[in-house]
Amino acid sequence: MAETDEGTGQGDETSDAEHWERDTLARLAAAGLAEQRRARRWGILFKSLVLLYLFIVLFAILNVGPLVEGTERAAGPHTAMVDVRGEISASSDANADRLIQGLRDAFDDARTRGVILRINSPGGSPVQAGMVYDEIRRLRSEHPDIPVYAVATDICASGAYYIAAAADRIYANRASIVGSIGVRYSGFGFTGIMDKLGIQRRMITAGKHKAMLDPFLPQDPAGEKRIKDMVDRIHQQFIDAVKQGRGKRLDDADPDLFSGLVWTGKQAIDKGLVDDLATPSEVARKVIGAENIVDFTPRKDLWQRVSDRLGSSFAAALDTELLSNRLR
Image (tube, rainbow, N blue to C red; front, side, top):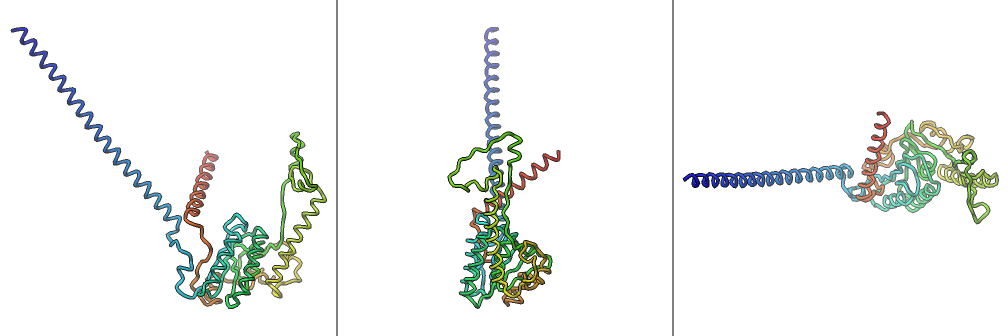
């Protein structure tokens, strides 16, 4: 009888242990499933937030505007506008190919009543500026009924004024910076530093003047004279273009006119460099007579705009982080 009771007790203990193990495994499995469900929900939420953020970024990049050019938005007679913004160079937004394409599109539109060059540029390449200048004069001769007006905003200097000189008239703000009719060449010389550090320049060239502009060699007087002659020739081309475009309006008696100096828009009127003070909207409304302005400046495609904006945002964030680290 004692043996039977002892066996029954052991059987009950084994049954309780097995039941506890099964219950524990069930609870662990349920907890694992619940954790997986929570992880999936958080994953879906995180992905949704990322997609929403990307949508907002793209929406901001596109400036909430339509992805069509100005010619498709114009419903009637209008003033066409092409922006000359920033440095003028083959690699910048203000390069000759883009500006010329915008000008051709503006002139080819039958609803265009006049063209405004809205300029905010310190200048740049005389080659790029000269190409745009020549194209404006060609388009003016082919479309004599469509006037071209240059309107300076903050700055219209050097190569930017080169372009403006091709217009029928030039307008500016009283505080605009106008002029800088000159050409410059600049570089650096490191020979003194190299001598102090004991560094020798080793270079092999074919051609007597091939290393003429090398910053690690002493400047050659003959090479300097050749560069000066080249710069003078380009300057004279600039002067001739301004005289051709502005004609008798220029104050030729002023010895500083082509010296590279700049003036305010108000002062530039007295020099003959500017005709009057006006904004683009005033020129469109009062001079051209077509208040509706349509922007014909060629736009970059979507991916270029996205990459440019993200690149700018990254650079700004990097600058902020570097500044913050310096201030710590």
